[in-house]
Image 1 (cartoon, one colour):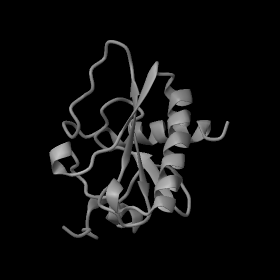
Image 2 (cartoon, rainbow, N blue to C red):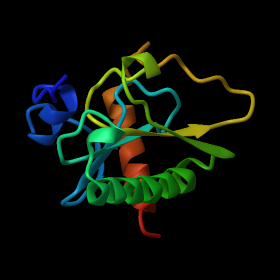
Image 3 (cartoon, rainbow, N blue to C red):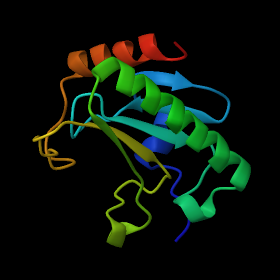
Length: 140
């Protein structure tokens, strides 16, 4: 299957759909998941077209994982969870629903279950506030 240039993340990268940006550079974009599993759930994507981990060139993958680490550190500072889960899925059988490589940065709390992904749309104003909290913690 070839890369779908009209997938939601490709459209966000082109500015056709809005997002609550956390950070961006020439290689990556990080933004709030609109259907968060916990407060602070953030996505990190490469700017290059790649359906999954296996299609992205090593240099772009390196840039993407470095941004993922940077965002995870900021999420940890902003939300003070006892754990941070980094998730990445390859193929529908693995649970991938948007076929543009992406990493989930999900704060985790003792005794709290994850909300089913895609079950509920997050409040836009709340997500904007979360993005601001994370941005304030970047590169501290």
